[in-house]
Length: 335
Ligand code: PAZ
Image (cartoon, rainbow, N blue to C red; front, side, top):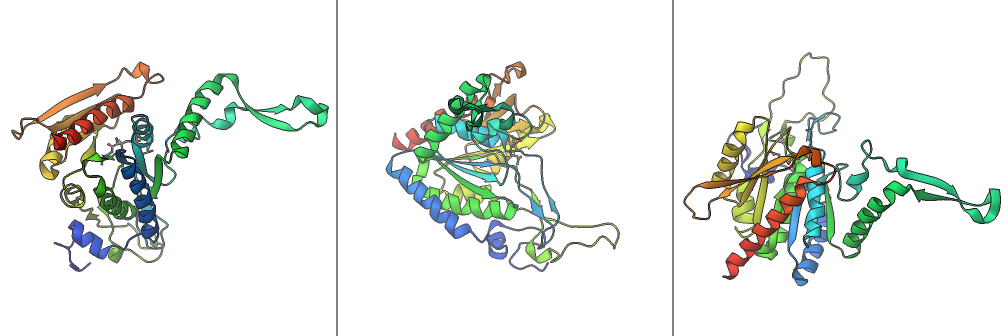
């Protein structure tokens, strides 16, 4: 690709990215819907959190047959969205299409399929010809009622707004557009960036139009780096007002804290939550700038006993702690 506004051939700034990569076709409508949602909750004096969740794809062809993807199922994001609702937030849940969603995640396909606990019963009134009805097994009734009640309450009160992305390009365009809409909330906006976003992509200008043919032997693809959009998110799109929490995933645990510190130094936001691929359901580390503003960082671990898995989810403690820190962030502007 030639240097169409890029700093080098393989190094897009955020600005050059948006100038050269096309927006998703439904962006304007999505933005209007977010605007309505935000306006409603600004008027109600409610804090709003943007939760991003799931992995992004990187298409290799314009008529896409093949794409790169990653492991993220969206468990962290979907679970956290429920606890944010419980904490009184209005939630914009921006997730990868078909990844886990708040509430329905409890009954996801292979782990806990809902068909397994539904029963078909004969309505007793009309003998053998009486209509059939569906019932829930005794054991599952109470937990389902709890999940269903929370789901209905969130929807009836209009507290949960859902947005969908598939590609890293969809994600980048949506994130910028949503953050511009959330700017009216100032400090009352919280960003919880749990999506696993690709670090590399293939610019449209480099993509093959049609399915890449296999006849030529091995395949060499050089990808460009996805621009580091946390920087403009923090300083431009949110004007340094929003409380921004990003996630850092590593597979070498010794990198977690240093990489989290590096991100804070580079982007200037409030918290990086570090998690290791293999232990992420049982422990995370909060890394944040020290309150003394001395250029140092503090770390705080949240740990759970893995044997407590079925009783408690780590996201419950993560969200309690973040809601507390977010309140302090809001109060700082008032005092
Ligand atoms: O979606 P999931 O529950 O399977 O995994 C969550 C996670 C590990 C993707 C998330 O906690 C995270 O660390 N996201 C950021 C990844 C990164 O860009 O480093």
